[in-house]
Image (cartoon, rainbow, N blue to C red; front, side):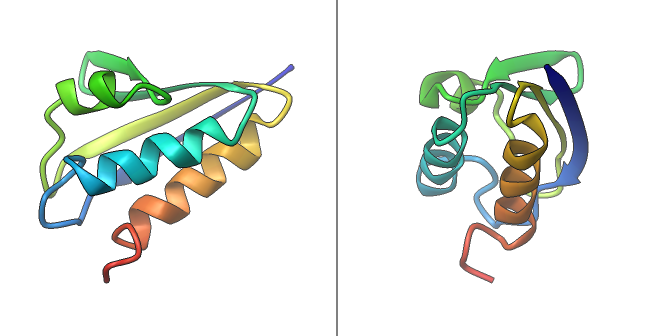
Length: 90
């Protein structure tokens, strides 16, 4: 079992709210790994829209994406690309 972790800054105007959060959760759900997203000392299940929204991630917030499982590295890479791309709206 592998683990992966990456820190990324959210640059999208609305942060991880509504559509960006839905895209984040949909992307996380494609992987078998257990994936968490953390903001400071709070973390959430990256496959749960309510958990992700509850973090209150706004533009400019730095988040940690952590995954554990066989496809952990691929999951973290995909989620990092999604966040860095501005959720496809850059």
